[in-house]
Image 1 (cartoon, rainbow, N blue to C red):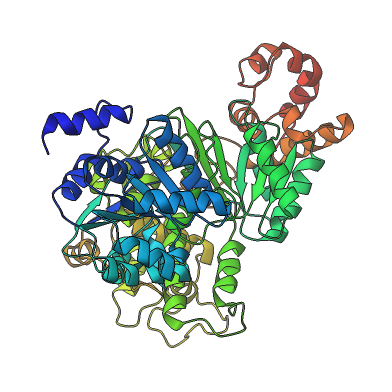
Image 2 (cartoon, rainbow, N blue to C red; image 1 turned 180 degrees about the horizontal axis):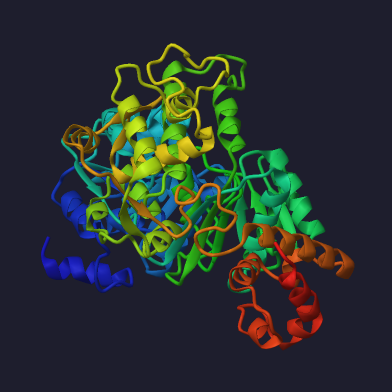
Length: 611
């Protein structure tokens, strides 16, 4: 195929150039190779099979599980004058028969079909009489039983391919980590496929993650503030894990004056339609949903996705947060998680199947491994984007600048960090932890902290050589030190399902050579002053607590949500600057003349109180 023909076809799809990775996929398919392409949602997967279909003889089959996505792609193809059709359960008998006749006559360039229909006798007979140069399998990760989104009907795809013998096969997915790709290739019978991974980094999408301590009230306040402080007029999409939490959180947000709806698998069709309509029309402040919401819903100007509970895997998280900012404009994804979120996912993993049968051990192992990897990443302090790119083995991971991605809260926090040498008490704590990690008996981070603290909790081995070695240090502080040493590379983790802390080569060399240990200290690093009443950014913790109480009381008096008084950013600025005059109050972000008039006297009195 000549280059002019290829570029003419590309322009027919409305593009002058390929996105990263697309040219490699298209070239491999046109050259007759099987392909396994891992591109994120919105990364341009559809062009990778639609363009070759236009240039190859015969009819390309596209296997897709979602009627809404099929209809959307068909509409786009028809606008460009490309003959294409679909066969699905939502069609009328007349529509389906017409599609079958066009397919049999060779009048189509693309035919979209669900996996359930592939091995029906009628479709097999049609396929046997038609030239099929390419079969594109969308959502290809669904073929693997221990994958994160297995769908039994996808087992039919491999059997169909073995009977149809297409000229080449293209497997496309947005969420296949390296361990899953080999299983996909085997299931589909791919022949020495070209594996192309690209495009997971989204610089316009700023990621943030924060663990919320202290129960339901601060968690609800954090979610409410994130929704209320969003940019633009559109809604926030708030993801939770369970249907019960979806309803309860939507109700709580509504009680604070926000327009909300909920969406989950048990909603009636009318409820789902009403929620989706309000979401698309910007008639809501927040749609609170389980992962049942999102597939087939294309709202390209979504500015904020909040995970009010942690996801169960990188696959789920990336697919969900990736729905923000698909128009290329700045967008934000926030994770506001609590320790109990892990236990919720672990419980759900262990639930029996719908038929009461025990889950496949391999399925359980893979699900727990994905959960642990994601949970570990949340507990770390490294770049959020780097953790995503590393997980999906995206080659762009190595290209991230040494000072971070520039698009996540952790890199922003660490930008002003400096490496300092540990001495005295701090050096001793770090050395004790490293020596404990070097011992033959290894444990996870929580149990290691309990051992070092000399805890009497059940299951903590009092005979361990390092038991009580840091008994004067609080277990929570030890855990923070373990994480800091992990972030700095002195410690690592081994194992997938139940990872244990181990000494790295860097840590072993530091111990052997008696090197002075150094750690990066971000301004908010709790290790720097674990008992201080003032955080490293200068905000007085006790004063901040008093400001929060005052804000809550004023909001109740006004009958308004707390964020209407001041958001958290303003409270932090007040606690840090402690302004003493009206003029100084006006210099605080979030305080203008109107709020100065309403709240200035109260604030000056409160800020003047002795600690």
